[in-house]
Image (tube, rainbow, N blue to C red; front, side, top):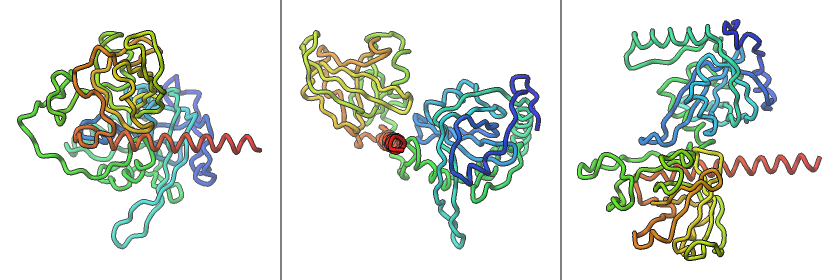
Length: 356
């Protein structure tokens, strides 16, 4: 299939998935055609999402999970069905999927993509996808499986064909999700509806009288873009990546403790300075913390502070708040566990490479 868009005219797909299956080595700079995109909400609040791509090489397809830092390309439509993408940093993953009764287990393969760059677009593929989507919607209002233009052949034992993208394939999807970015979520029984509670989350801690009432949470990525660049009150759920000892500072009470916190919305670890009872702020590194009423600041391109002037407003931080049903502690801790595993694998590769 020849690309019709001028931007994509210079891109020629090479059949590399077969070799990828054989060698299990991900070659940086590999070019694929995006043949399908799915955005999957991992929680009812849709706070954590996974974006799954179907990548084709002109002959075969393979599914890929997109790292959170790369989600922006899909949200801004820089990557759509029909886009050519250059994958700079990705890993080949394999796991055994649960089998139905009487059937043998199968091996599922997929990619985890950490760095990707959009190159151009194949207008023919995009047009075919749009036409097929309209036809599917007309035939079945509930929706059906999106078609893909590339020949759908299994890559060895890889379930890389279009059937992998059916909505009822939740078991295989959940198996893949165990490997990346808040992807392991045990089944949860929904809490009984409580009409007396407000439908919308509470924004300000001063109005938060029942801890089981959801707070409006701000992602760390949004810190520099709040309505005011300084002293805007917000609430965040994040992982404590590092924590300093109590040290002297120039602001009352002239003592502070600093931390670096992170969440799936950004690769940056955000600076947090605590002036309110710094001795008592001692969450474990690696724990999830709910911080209420922290103020944004311009320092470090967007940081957070908890001032001593907030004294007397009650408890403001919660370590691993499992008791708060609305707070996605499991999701963010599983995401961090996967990140730590990835960092450890990268470090071990550097050590091995240095010994050669």
